Length: 237
Image (tube, rainbow, N blue to C red):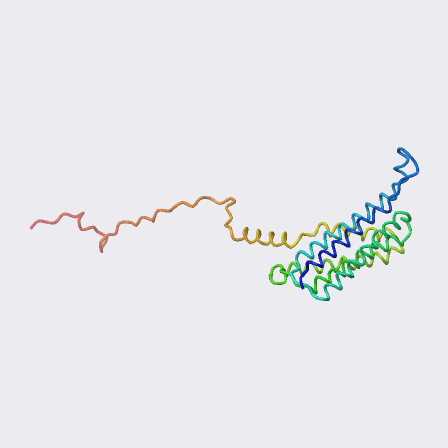
């Protein structure tokens, strides 16, 4: 199967969710500077939801860019990943209106972990050009281990948010920052090629120019007996 329709459908879901975020913004009843304080919670909901959903879309784009062939399982897991996206605005709204209650924090962290788990499964069931390159496969395996650790941290944050909501907020924020900071496969390949080039090139730092050495001069050879025959005059008879 090709991934063209999968990309179109996924982008459509993200676009709709990002558009629906603005529906929570209502005109304030106050005027002037007082209107900003009245609409501040709605602006925080919009900013927080847009930032999280935007980070998910960037990660989704990176994953689908590397995929070359998909399966039926890829479609189902991608659909499951998209299921968690519309819940983010609800979670951020609950967190802004009731920041000290655990519901919003737990939902945000849980959505992060569930989305990453679903999109990781979608990537595993698909085929990518990375799977054909041994060195990039090693980079892929390390990245999967890292994402697995982030998923566990998100689910732990969702559970611990019922004890302290700020744990859930911290887990969700760390996930979003990590998704934005992770290098792409193209960047990883460029790094490997640069390391290969640096390892193959001879190092010229601190090197002194080599000078040709003259062959060592040999001492004049003497005849047997240690006396040159040409240095002694012949005795006349």
